[in-house]
Length: 316
Image 1 (tube, rainbow, N blue to C red):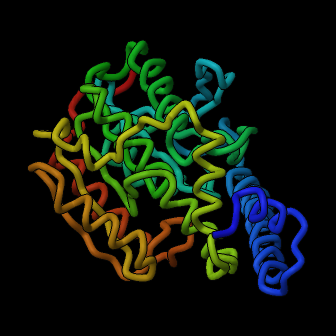
Image 2: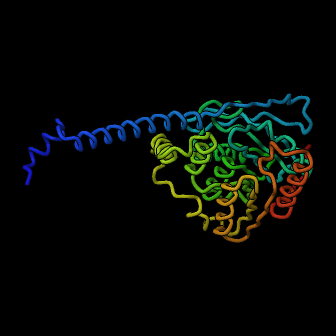
Image 3: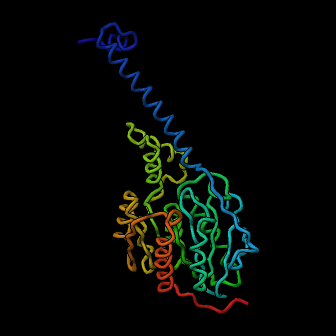
């Protein structure tokens, strides 16, 4: 039997061909993992800091008489949103844009809701539109949504206890995460919602074309988790869906986005009543053609009219 110090000496100063081969393989594996981790970290940074698009509007000339509303997000600075008034004392619908989108791309949906006398509010999440920073795919965005609700609830022209929220992927996650802790949210439309932020990281890596490389997805998820270490104990949203008992939710699945559609379907199946499901051929409201947008807007408005009626007094 070889003595321990002989084995250690051979590993440190290999003399046999098979030991040299094993050490070479181990070295290659080590550098491959190191390179993969470095590429994954850079890729995650690119994913959480998307190219910002901003579609600003002239508040004085835009139909609907919108007001600029500033609100503070603890630890994240200030945000500015657009408030479109409906009936005085009516519920407020907050629109939460998706990943790589912005508030200015949702104005036709705003008009459809405001035409039915809802108060409507929209703003840019961090790393999108007019807001700097990086995205956390919903962890901190839910805090931004809460800050917006707190600010709007202090107004005298809205119902402070009655909010509806529409969200698309990133916005849908933030909306559901906030609603599970906030009884002021009375109705939700969740388009392409996911269960945990790592799922969006995985999708981002796959869409970059690098998802097929060994360990790339898992390395990217690990990098993202490290960047958001304070949320390490956060449960998937599906584990807390019981808190939504009695809150109407419309789950929208897009056939042309199969991965998110399947996650959304699973979330729908786990959600308590009252729940509704809509399956549409094309996702991403921003990129829809005019006909698909009208159908989509009608579906969303009808849901809110039935589940959260716009009652109040005409604005003075």
